[in-house]
Image (cartoon, rainbow, N blue to C red):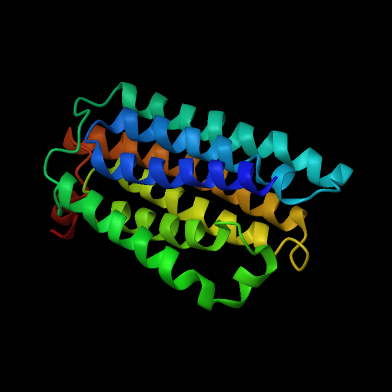
Length: 213
């Protein structure tokens, strides 16, 4: 089971780098959708004796992270003229290099954290740290509103992995409440993205500076 879990987590790490290295917004959304669907399988792989309640959380997690939220974002993208992140604060290749360095850092230093002892041999803690770092890079170095939303989703995916480590201390019902808040937040953000595009004919959040006048 640990080998299967680590295989899934390695794929998650690869998806982080792919999201950092592509300029097409729809590709980034689909990458995060695949990542979210994979992470929805974590409760099954983490627990040998899967409870009924835990099993019930798998379906809504995969549905929200892998289908509903990405579908909302792709729908918001349809009426937008700009489909690529043209001028990020940090270029695509430097972003991938930065993400790779963050992954190496996470792999080297994750064992120093107390949470790593709970699942020895698994890559849960380094994957969580690396995913949070990748989401932070996307969130802070991209200027298109939807790409920043994707960065927020990747950041939340990393936090979701940490939540799986604390599942005994934090009931899954709390995690589902977080997912509901995430869904509502993304729904509101997609509406705001459409309003930004109608007002400025662009998704570039730097245009919002003009509102100060």
